[in-house]
Length: 510
Image (cartoon, rainbow, N blue to C red; front, side, top):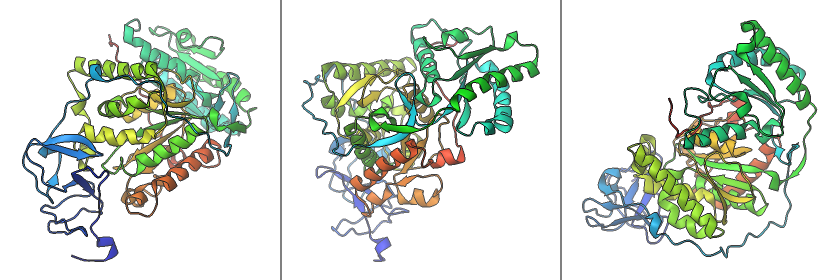
């Protein structure tokens, strides 16, 4: 075997109790490779996939992160490749048997140094990190006209308002042909209402309706606010529609133009955490580093949200002891139970996650994926639990229940008031949000090398020993402050890579 440094066989075992490790080397390792601790590979093993460390008999536990990720469906020997086809999925933690925690004894030790970011004060007591005019349609029918009007605004008018960052249409597929009085319709409706008051919009809002939709514009207007409202069916033709939207937008732009950045304590910041295009490195590089950054943010008094129910469900027994009190613990269980029922009604279960790309990256099943996913929550106590689309109401580490889908999770975290998002990826994604910067953290060096101008921070250095979890975590923490202050842009923001909003709507469509 070639003994050049770059060819040295490397694998990572997370816990002493683990009976599998993952291969680190780019391109994987061929059969016959010998590790420095004496293990010889009996199969070709791709990068990120698992190698058996000791004999595992049929039906015995396969252990990673010191947790059971599956049961062997055949005998496995040291040096074998073990993938999704060689293990059976374990049952999830039974919610009815989980013990609620006693009041958490975990203490939050505030950082001695006080951290600040440069942001915008809002009249409702929140702060923003961007100065954006949001235009909210009450129904998808008006979006074609809205896009034309915004195109005109950006081409002919926005340059007159240099302190306004952007004009964004909060386009969505809700509003008509939907059962707005069905019990679960509260989720998309409150999400839209909360998007309308997103802190990066500075209290300004233009609502555009068609006129005949079920969800009328006034149902989206938050109490105590007086947004500009236009109803297209009251306009005389297309040109008048465009002109009315542009004139109303200019009224908002003039007010937004007066805003200036001021020093804000980090306790005003709301940060969302998410994974997408995950691989087996996610739980040992990017997510632990994000978790370290999350701990620093919480110690500064900020609000930090983690989400993705199906990517938490199989690790709920590890999160429950971190609940700040029994009420928070009960809310965690309730959100898991609600989603179990939601999947069951749809004829699906948690095994529908992970995606093919996750499996190609070495994640055998949802249990392994969930154990890596929860690493980004760090180690602080969980102070609150939000139902989908609820707005953040406190400080600390918060569980905000959302689907795991990247763009649905992102939309729902925006509805909860997220200023910016930290997003780990192993396979790579070009995902971004118009209302909030998205910082991409790669799990592998190879992804950063391939996507130099998309990935913001490379956590792959942790796997190769070039950096520690703490060093990369501090780097993420510092970049969050710089981006929040407008001193830097994320790559997604720089290239304006913005996904459509995608509301979570479990209610009927009529």
